[in-house]
Length: 98
Image (cartoon, rainbow, N blue to C red; front, side):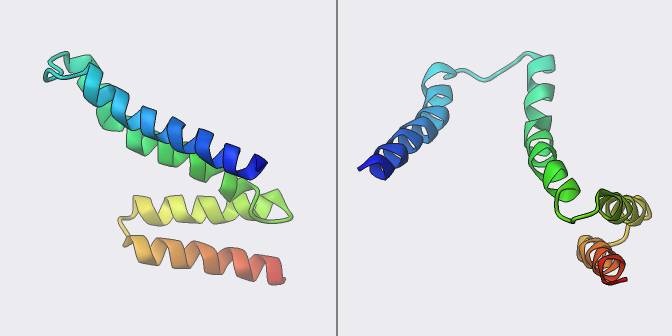
């Protein structure tokens, strides 16, 4: 019974988070600062969820840092997303194997 209550609370919370902005903000947002802020929200949210998982993905944190650094360098050099993810995962795998 407790699990169903948890699911219900999470469903209502998720529903309200999506419905409240639709009902409260009916007009177009004209404030440039607020619009700029809303533009970056998805990227920040993804970063906040991903970065701790990267650092805690291995037993030794320095391996995670090396993999993250390699991914950053490859991304800076404009390597494709697939190559960045595969390259950094392969590097972390090899470092853990050694």
